[in-house]
Image (cartoon, rainbow, N blue to C red; front, side):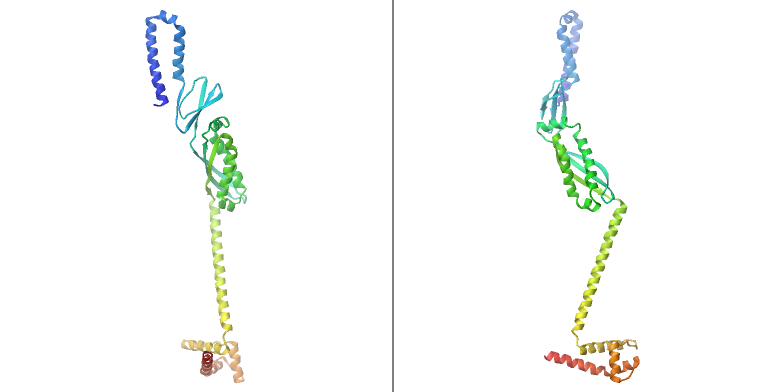
Length: 316
């Protein structure tokens, strides 16, 4: 049975008793006047029972700090606790963990970027009697006090960081906020279970700028990798060309001439070295067509020489 229901039953019983007394009074007024000393206190008791709660039923997670004439007298609960109003009063303390949402804070970071920080804290009162008493006597409202303190602490801590640090060091910021709140909450008998930054909202312009910066970094990295690959290819060709003999180079050139001859083009561009070689062989300045005819004439000889050179290398 709840304390309130018990109080109602007692009150109904006393009302019935008062009705009975009034009936007796109407029948025997002289007797009432003779026993006025008894009747008046009885009526006063009935009024007090109707006006005040004197039996408290406290759940397992509730405690009652009882004051006698304004001074802390005891801690009641869990279960039933008796108080004696109006000489005594009480305040109930909830020992369960409270999840407190901190209003979103507009922060200016160290690098002058405005962000919106959303946080939540988890608090509870210790079960020992001293902590229960302190949660009432040491602070007016420990939930509101914790909320206001953390709002200022978030502005101070987050405002000392630049945007990159704020985003990358959220865990460290949570620990710092928790430690700061614990320093004052312990005097209230309150335990800080956790302080968590739920979200950091950035302006759309900042988000777009960050995406563009990331894309630029990716393009730069792609260009660097492409340049490195091209350089490696050039180095490979250079190393391969250094190991080729003159006969091998002549052979590959003749093969290239044959490939060109298979196509529709009738014009060939010869390197300067081959042009000088043809002119030195003929002893006179030749035109492009004359150099082409001369090289085609001696192409079979160059191929045979290149083939002999390969045969000799293989026999070795």
